[in-house]
Length: 130
Image (tube, rainbow, N blue to C red; front, side, top):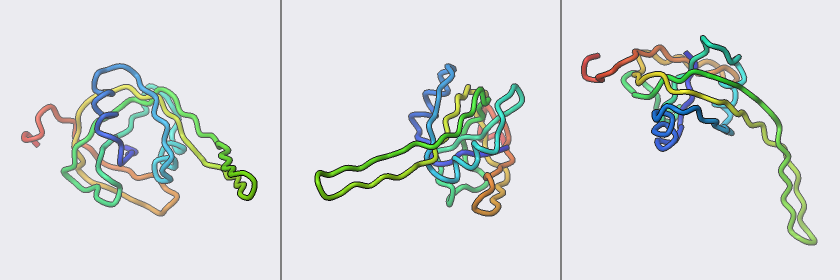
């Protein structure tokens, strides 16, 4: 399953309430992970508040169903009169998600910089039982 890492604990808690929520992601590894997905009834993600560099077996998170995916470019303009003007573009991904279950990482697979992070997870009601 594809993983999104470094997600705020508050966002995870809000998703656990059961209502669909839309996340806008800007970190490169999470945008790459979202861009590799197509929304559908059998598309799931693993979300955790653990940073990508620290993700390892035993880390906890949640499984969510992907309801929609959108990747777009946003234009950002910084203007300080009269000397400084900078224009740049930022790739962002938006995804609408619905909570499914608590889970724990069993194995982690990270590929090259342009590949999504994937994890094997165990769906759990009680973490001590695993």
